[in-house]
Length: 399
Image 1 (cartoon, rainbow, N blue to C red):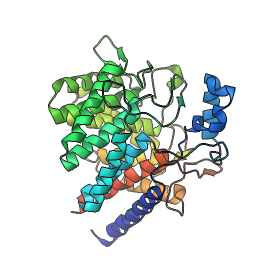
Image 2: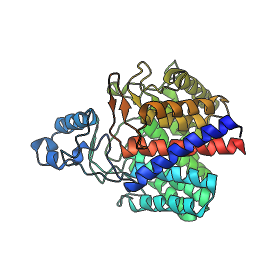
Image 3: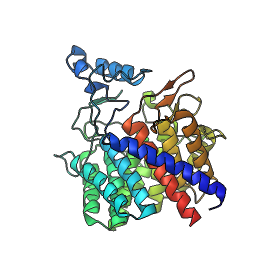
């Protein structure tokens, strides 16, 4: 590395170490933008039994400029998806350093993840640590959903590869049983399929279905099961068919899910790339991925690295969007030689505008104020994962 590269690496390494120390001190437990229904105060009101009441309460607490969670008795907790992200960060750090300390750290996080599995389904599955009322369905605590489940599978698959540990692969393989046997399916006439968000819903959310497909593809590649790749291909076809002429994807199939945002687009692109590398995809799907990446990169990032939240608005600037942007950019380095440079600019912009002097990252920068609440899954876990991957890539390119 030259002097400038060393300075840049040092800057990101300090941020990574300070954030890791902050999260470790709290046992990787904290608050979440969507944990309002954990409020002991709210649970003792009639509104807790009302769909509209749960939805409004969740949004009121989520959008509060100051954190009200201590006042309304919401406890800080560990989150399964957050734990998976912390484990992914730990694995990236270990691949870079190859030390006993980093191995123990990554394995301890994977063990936390294994202990958080939800029982009673066809395979391994995970859910959120709070009741979750969306616009389309209600998922109480103890209900598995595909998003935390797929991220847990991603962490376990990387653990299996990094440590040559068959137990991690065995559990990841059982996730495929949950996906194929417990998630409702939407079928198209051309054989395309869409996996639902949870066993109790029939929603068609594009990034969520692709996360299921990514898991099937990655496991199928590891175990040699072609049928898993075939299912992944059918789910890929469904999402590709939903692409808009400009290359974008909305959040889901319903009219109430028609928005276009940074990180859900990033999730679609990341999963498409993983499926492509694991099992291959049709030429039309590869072209759709290229169009989607071009739209996402050109639309959601300013020249200085500012990560826009929506395609048509600068605000809010969000740590989650920044982190998922960094991670997805790094996945497209082979086809975009400028991706690493943009990932670094996104990181530096986030340091300047969303990083606390205490080492953690704020939630969002609004037009007139910044919401400084630290959210363990949404902001901290994602940023730790992004910083770990960025350091891993910079070290790889310098070697």
